[in-house]
Image 1 (cartoon, one colour):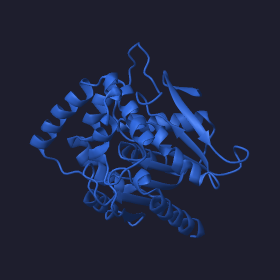
Image 2 (tube, helix red, strand yellow):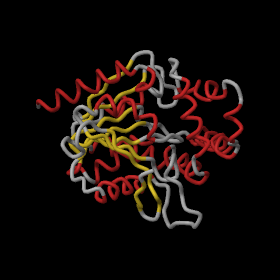
Image 3 (cartoon, helix red, strand yellow):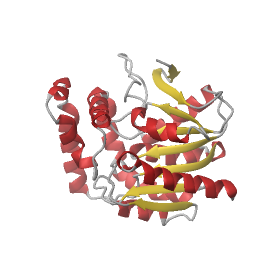
Image 4 (cartoon, one colour):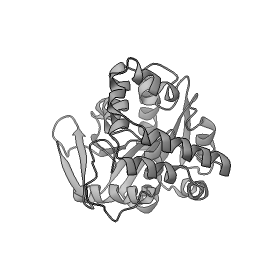
Length: 281
């Protein structure tokens, strides 16, 4: 299992490519909360005819396990952006395409605005602008705390547990192995990482800074929303895209929080069209 040390944490990463590695531009994929790079593999494989695709697990998620000794690192999204910068520097990558989802798209946005010279184009999926509601956020934190605390491996042995777990995220059915992989990743996530990123993703600070961050993006960017997403509703994506003429917005019909899994064909069509047009320009 390939690992790379980033600030004291062994980060899992993998390459998906065709032919010799290094002959194509690099597209780096960033997953969302509770997941891992695994759910990007099909999309990366489909794009590997034109890109060397770099997948990695965020600190504390998937196979990027935290050490037993405490580290002086926070769970602010900016810090995850710095992790990405160190990963790219360690691998000797000067310029990449960024392809990110959900929480990962927030990390990507912060990274892009701090290292715009390293980013050719960006694709941000299922992200957007939240409005602050103190009572709603407090309730979300309380519920999220329970969700993170009460995770047991035996959930995997309950019939249809993966289907019930993913129901809130989906408008269309996805493959059983994809549902199970996400449930496995969720159960595997480090407690502190999973809990603290809930607070940093959905916070008053995020509400205040993310509109400014979307407005500052200076590279060609595609914002994709799922029409029926109830985790990050499409309206939030439209509002983010409206702040910046560098951001093109597309909504994929009859999909929710995982349009790349729910309607792979439509998702790839949108992505490929964006990449073709921007490459010509």
